[in-house]
Image 1 (tube, rainbow, N blue to C red):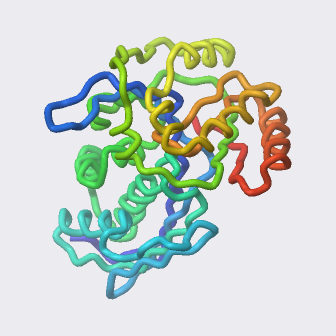
Image 2: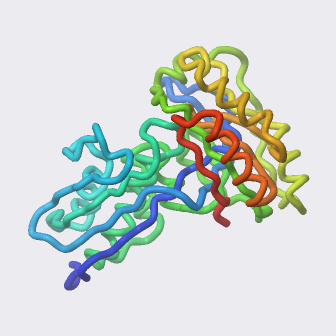
Length: 291
């Protein structure tokens, strides 16, 4: 049983970035097999949990509008699953500060669920192994386990097989979302063509240049399908492709966010400012990759 809870616990929910995403097959149940390198950026949402006699979710922040705080929200689902596992009542006032665009391919909902599991484990003073947390995370969605892991990782299977990535060089990203949301199931359903080979790399890239070269040998197999649904994604990719200093531009996840890879903060921030000037209604952020 948990001890007396602390007053307030906060947990960061960083943006999840697929540096590449290859579809390697499809199971009989329709789920696609994946090969992807996932990293996390130093921008994201935040979860704050406070002791209470009930379970309540409040959503605030620039992207709070239109989000439900009901039982279908991944944050509430995470709280209920954790409490059920621990054999306790789910009691907490949870605040989600939504800084990331919704349905944008950077794992906002999955990261929020993972942060909720971490925050409530501490608030309720539970003792769970990492394997317990990962098993609970898997019940919430394919991307939630790697968000619980929270470190650069290769994923395979349908997302449930997580392999720690080798040490990666420091790098910066520009994240660009042209102000649209896109349905992940629709993007997967629209994908055609051959499957890719599984191609994670085991040797740490010695420097940024080699890192960028390795990523350029891989791709995002959902890009064509996503652009067919939302042509604005191509416009975002084109803006990144013409940015001085970028060594890779690619769609992230199932879209609609795209990213450019840069060696240092100055080049990344300059490119972000230039794209923002040209496209004032887009959501654009420069962000460091978290080690």
